[in-house]
Length: 337
Image (cartoon, rainbow, N blue to C red; front, side):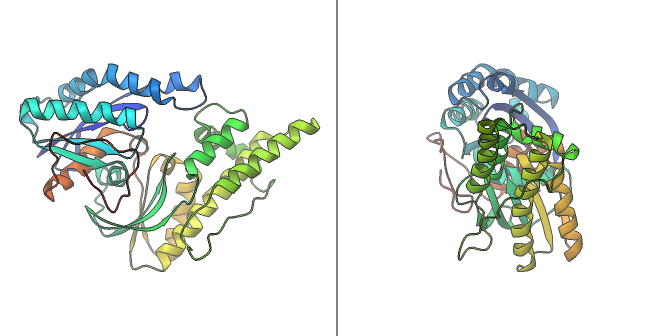
């Protein structure tokens, strides 16, 4: 069964053909990242305009690389939530038009579910397992009880870890995306130079809070600037990254120890972070857990993960009509469409 996946939740316009949820036949991405770098972050209006300009060619190229036509596709899967609403609408409306014209089923896919499915593309991972989803907009610990059955065990109460890393990188003067820049220069810094308090949520041992960490690093930079002091950015970056990763892995570890899942996985853009991957491996080794990591090329937004999850959604009977809308927010465990 071949699924055509379409992804446009942020600044990547992507299309992919995946067979039986596991075999990637094509994976095409057109990114407007370089343009957003000029502004230090994603500009929603620019992103949606670039999606509109690129999506037709991207889908055509994905079909071409997969050596198939729309007639050979069994269903069209599209990311419809959560994400930037203007960006999502481009993908959703294109997918609706294509599905209608070709007479193919339309399958709505939740973006976080798709990130989890990135692990299915490069491993034999099957539910049940525990997954830490970390991206620019989300930080969740999720129990994956089935391909379409999820339970939220922990989540951020404010900023996402990826957002905190990006904004910290920007205030340090590093190139956008800040999280990637921090990861690149951290190995050359002293991660013990600066200390940060690890926020805790009363009554919610698995939840995260990153707004305090973000504010703390901003204050360090501003105070140094006011005093005319020069900061060692590599030290600050290494220290900040260390503390963000500690917050993530500590809660992930508690959830893993206190649950019956014997397998753990990472997903989302920040799952590419080298320190997070290394510390997660150590954590799983301590407790005899199997750890699954998506290939780096599938950590960021892509359509292969959308097509993969679309396959399992379609098998479960999920199908949308042509009134399908896009949603900026939606919980992973209680989807509507």
